[in-house]
Length: 126
Image 1 (cartoon, rainbow, N blue to C red):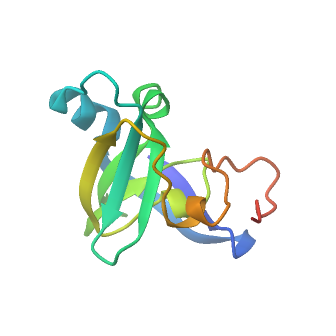
Image 2 (cartoon, one colour; image 1 turned 90 degrees about the vertical axis):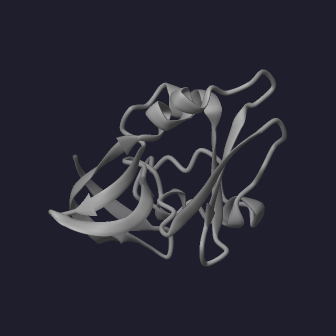
C-alpha cells in the first residue's frame, strides 16, 4: 500500500513515502483470539517507545499493518497507520499486548490525541 508518514514536529513535511508491505494488525489479533475485557492494543518497541490503538479501531481497519518491507526492501517490523500521525507508526516493534485498561503510549501520555487522525495537516500539539 502507498502511504505517507507525517511527524507532528514537522506537520507539513512527509518523512517517508512509498510502498509498504505487511500483514494487517487485525489479522494477527484475530489469530491470537482476544479475550473478553480487552479493549486496547499496546505496542512496544525495542528502543522503549510505546503507542496504542483501541481494539475496535484495529479490528475495523485493514490498513493498519505490521510492515516488513518498504519500497521492496526488508525492514524491521513497524506499524503503518495511514491517515494518522507518525507517533502511531511505531518502528522496531517487539511486543503486542491486548489490555483491559486505558494504556497510553509515549506521546499519548504526553497529551497527544489517542486517535492521532490527521485532520487538517497541522500538528495536534499537546
